[in-house]
Length: 112
Image 1 (cartoon, one colour):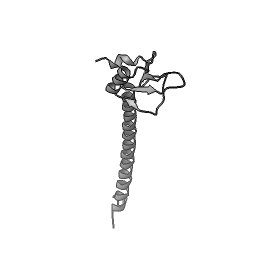
Image 2 (image 1 turned 45 degrees about the vertical axis):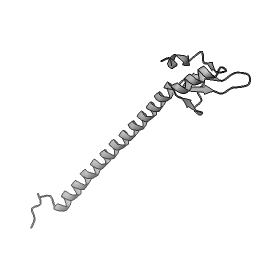
Image 3 (image 1 turned 90 degrees about the horizontal axis):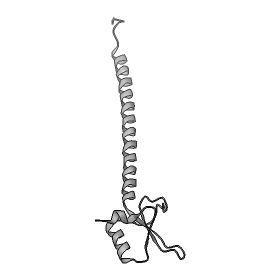
Image 4 (image 1 turned 90 degrees about the vertical axis):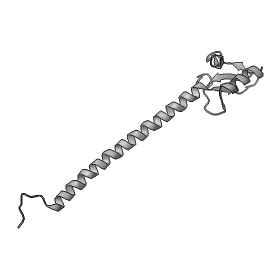
């Protein structure tokens, strides 16, 4: 007859399974947390990159097109083509009808 103070092999396996299930739950939560943090970091990096660029507000009626910094609150449209520094310089120097935004001062970032 077996000793009643001894834990049976079946009970040991059940306890081990419960412990491993707990560890899997902790690991799953850690993975979810890291995925969320990476996603937030990607969004922050995209926003920072967009703020560093330039954007042209299209012509409206008689008003000429306006050059803005990517993060300018005056023209906060998300769609449209973003310009890099070279494209923005070309737009300002070769397109005489493009006006620079007086609020975000896009020309400050165009200086070499």
